[in-house]
Amino acid sequence: MQTLRIAAVAAMLGFVALAPALAQEMEYPHQNWSFEGPFGTYDRASAQRGFQIYKEVCSNCHSMKQVYYRNLEGIGLSPDAVKAIAASVDVPTIGDDGQPAERKGLPSDHFKAPYPNDKAARAAQNGALPPDQSVIIKAREGGADYIYSLLLGYEAPPADVKMGDGMNYNKWFTGHQIAMAAPLTEGRVEYADGTKATLEQEARDVTTFLAFVANPEMEERKRMGVRVVLFLAFMTCVTYAVKRQIWSDVHH
Image 1 (cartoon, rainbow, N blue to C red):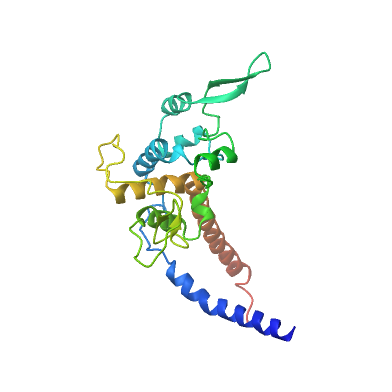
Image 2 (cartoon, rainbow, N blue to C red):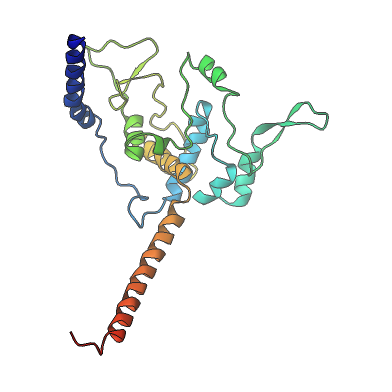
């Protein structure tokens, strides 16, 4: 029993000693994002290009179950454009006869998932379940920097690394072996606004879009925060002035 306790303590100490090294290993290169800081805002043009990448590439495997088509107005798309995007997909419904049917999508619908359920997704992806991307920026340590690094982290594995069947080497993925093949390549999409689709540009744009869908109320929250700070500063000045007035005739 004593031996087991010693072994457990040794293993714990070993893990504690290893933790800083692991944290340092996964310290993703920081990028300058337009939405950072107390006054940061989303780059609408970049977010729209990112949506194009999601629609043409990512949506073939990844769902966004918590995002509505109407949310796309937040990246600068017009209501008519959003209606057209929603109507381009068929969503399941119940017909007047009570039987399963389909109808054209509406802005009030969630993004249509590529698979009807998780089992179907795993069956199509050799057992791997593509994660939902609704809040993946918040769900992954490193946030936007992690997603950006991951998308650019695919490379040939070192000679001493044995890869599992169907796995791909990614230097920024934990364990460095990931089931998802490199989703982006140079010129993978043809941007509607004419921007050159370099690999870095594609990664930055789709990351910006994912940041928006994970936190669409960010800009309003920041504006509210600025108003609150200004109000508190004003009230502090008023309170100080009142205090000076009330106590002006009291000698200390």
